[in-house]
Image (cartoon, rainbow, N blue to C red; front, side, top):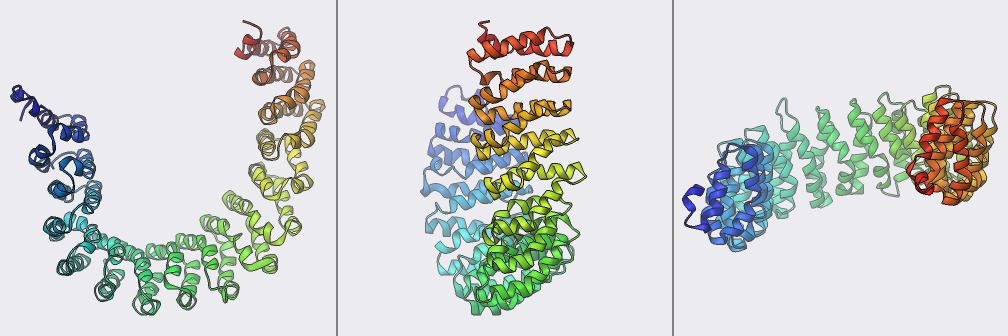
Length: 599
């Protein structure tokens, strides 16, 4: 229907425009038209939307993928526009067509929309319209329709009659044994979801055999079916009594933990603590502990890293009566090996959780067994490993106390802070604010404050710059009173240093610290120091004084600017050095000063 044919009937105009735009060669126009479907449906009314618009859409499922994706998304929220729940089934034909297209994202979005509108069907509509759609998709000639069908069983199963439920279970069985790996993979991914809505007797009689078969799928170059079956294992184990879990699920899980494909073993490691919750403490002790040891020693680094991530949580959830024994006998030997692993991702994964073992094992075991491991990781060449250890020092501090911590780990931190390689020193500087927060202000002042000030006179500029930023973060953490007592006096002292680089660092620190210290401390203490450096004998220092005064300008009131800042900038503008003149003039022309001067 073209727009030219509708001049006598304005009510037909919206659908005519839609048709014209949907047939336009420009993809963007077609896409815009799809995105306006709700507006067009409102203009047409519910009856004409059902009788004209929806059939038209069902006939146009031959377009660019982005247009089809937008259509699939729109139809999921179209129920009110077709007359509500009583007529929602009329949305099924276009969505069924979209669920069979070749592009995966379009099919997935169509399935999402079908799942959303399934709940809006009455029981009779489910059996008369939705379930037949599921059956058609399940028996489709192309694998695309059969993969889409897998996601629809769980949303309709609970609300249909016993006979229809039996048919649905049979169709799902067929999909699980489909000749095409992609279909079996889709079925495996939805098996756990379907298991949650199926009656317990059919879970045991129908779905467990399917789970076992999928977990042993022998597609030569495709392990994804077995991999997805591991996810289903968590859902199924949580639904069964522990006695049935041992008999029906554990043999499959044991096989998966030793699967020839590292990706399947990785999935077991990734889901390990969920499996632990699902199977209970007895099975965990008998079966999961040996399996976890095996995964921690796996030949593939990805599997070891995934397992290492779970160490703390797995140990936490062990039966308290055997927890310490299991950790010390079975888990800790593996952890000691992982600390020296050749792969940095494995070591980093372990470092992110290993500190959490301290509260579980207590003070004595931490001091004897864990502290040496922490020390090793603290000296690791990988920055992420060191960061993960420093980030979690509070866990250890709570268990062994600050005194023991300072005797064991602080010397290693100080050693790294004085390392001959400047990048190592830089890494420790970046961790210092975090470390300060972990240790508290008193301990920091006693053990680490002097170290932070020493970095300000490092021979590498990157270290001096990072040290200044570090001081700012520490002031933000500990407050201005701490800054006025512990930091600012030492910074000001540098203004009188014989080395002009250290005097420049003083200005750098003032630039960085001013905002954190606030107006009062800056004007009272730091501004006189800056002004005093206006007569420095090194031009580089003098023009940095001008730049510093420009940067600090917004912190000063008009009186301070007129009486202290302006006279000194005027003097610097008369300096014999061209750079000093230039930066002084630039400072005087800064908007904050111009307004203070009434310009």
